[in-house]
Image (cartoon, rainbow, N blue to C red; front, side):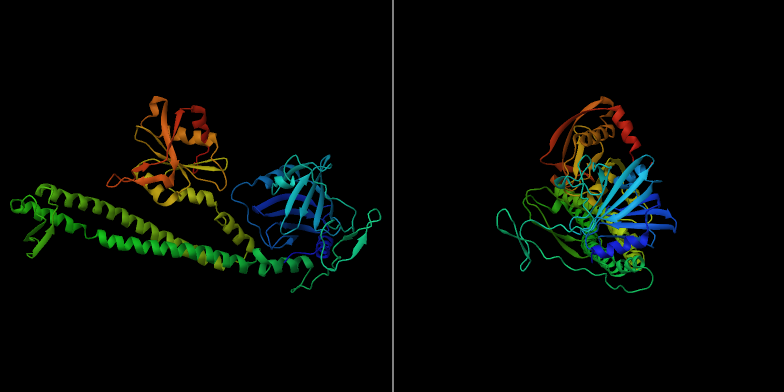
Length: 497
């Protein structure tokens, strides 16, 4: 549900914003902003939501969780308008654009809240309409720093599109051309009756918390259920496959016994034999073993021993993976249960947007992720320090489009750059990762080195190779010289310090 212009006017009339001091700007998610105000009627929290289906402005009586990391637009507003006073707050005509003028010292700022579900935005300009920043930067609309935004027009004037129109709309004749211009008939709006008690702001706040579209508890719980049940289901299926493989690998001891039997009967194996029938001295039963006619008896036994060693090693990895998967499944189930009991829609919305409620989602992910994590601007670089961490990162923490780097000709760490949707890895981030790959390798003392890099989806595991060993394809070369200044900056960006 969207608010109509009469409802917005009623909300502003009840709020009595002029004269209020802005004490704090809180952005709990990328599309939810709140202003902590203090005025003649005491403290209040003004909410502006740009969420589709829940785009609105009103006072909220629910606590708003803080973002786990500083968000750009909130930081900008806190640096400009905090401690400023609201001089006016009005809707421009009846087009659902609210203008709030704030005086901070000698300067005036204008905040425009455009409450259109398909094109909502919150824009800050100076007195001349120069855009200083916007909650959503929209280059195609010119809504970014340095652009201009001047939607102001006389109050009460309704603007109409000049082309098109709707069937049955009135026609107005152009005196110059004689042609009629089709314009949409003006729709009549009323203030809708809302359930509950108290002011219209209180009723609206309750409505959106309970059933008001994308930010209602019902919708958010359903979204959480879909997200988590899908993950839990996929994890359960993966665990089932791993347990089947564990059962298969549990028979590894049989391979060792086969090797022992072949060596015990080495004189009975002739060149070209395809089968060996002998006594199983462990059980006393007869056993028939498949042989490779091209191999000697000793080589046959070694083949069985090699399969035994590989499966025994793989069994340990499988059991560790099953244990990790079971813990993750239990964590997801416990988190889903907690979300189903959450009563604050803003806290639930924040969790679904950022992955955490009340704690830093990024820090929690960094804590659970093996290796070292470096957060450089909006990019995440992860370093595995040994074969075990390299293998764990490959198995659980990177995806196909993430970038993998490794120093040529020297043992060393795997370095991954986590891919961002629709973004190409910048050169300076690539050089950051390259310096880390060189620093955490045996080639560190050379001061420079060649690296290869490719996407994770172009790596394949070396069959029968050591744990974590991969063979890259479609790789590119990068020559890196150690940059001490860059490494010092990266150390300051290391997560978990």
